[in-house]
Length: 142
Image (tube, rainbow, N blue to C red; front, side):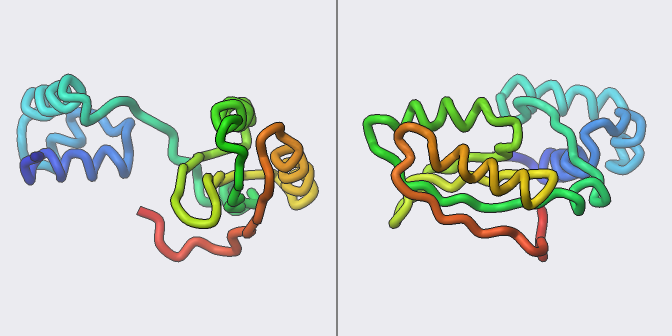
């Protein structure tokens, strides 16, 4: 269980993982040493496993994002995952319950590129069926 202070620190790091220790300390009202030790504890406990990049909204608005639902041959699921992992345009892959086995979230620079990507995914050995939905807008992004 995380303390309120740790939750707040994680929230600040989600906003800007590159924030300086001094900035985090100022916003939390504690010393830099306290912030640094909390971050180290969170890393050691495996709660923080890495740091990422958050793209600028102007850049992301130029991308075409889609959810691609996949039905896969169970014995070839690992092969499909490996193939998807090799595509730089794949942002996330989820295993799901229901009529489909996986949901892939992809970004493409254009509709034409998305069309080619969807063909590439559909042609993968083990992919039986796909259903795609292009994201028109994001209403909530936490």
